[in-house]
Amino acid sequence: MANQTSIFTAQPRPADYILAASPPPVVLAYGIGVDSTALLIELHDRGETPDLVLTADPGAEKPATYQYQKIMAAWMAARGIPYEVVRYVPQRFKHWPPYYSILSNVLTNATLPSISLGRHSCSLGLAA
Image 1 (tube, one colour):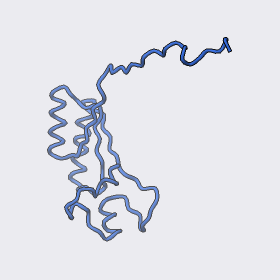
Image 2 (image 1 turned 60 degrees about the vertical axis):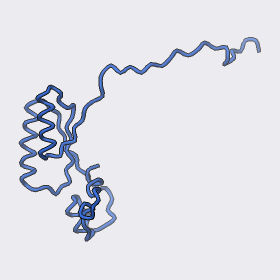
Image 3 (image 1 turned 120 degrees about the horizontal axis):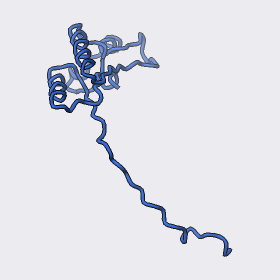
Image 4 (image 1 turned 180 degrees about the vertical axis):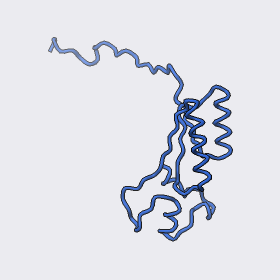
């Protein structure tokens, strides 16, 4: 029993340190609207360019919005700003026909988006 080391007499464990050598990445949620475009340009002009710019595509934007998105994607590419478009792709379908956009969801389920009822969650599932 004398040869066994007790857990109470063992050497103390060295302290853990959290090193925060660099700030966390800055990700801009880009809605392709006036406000988010102004913010993106202002951040770039200040030299505070985001580390990543993300756009959630609900799949039901106007053609002009998609054209403008291409213009802004080219603007970001020319400045080396990483830009990604994300889109919800359902894997299992509870309803038929399956839907891939907010508009298809509304038509398939014969419902209105919650924004029309004063709530703001209609695109949460499609933008995740």
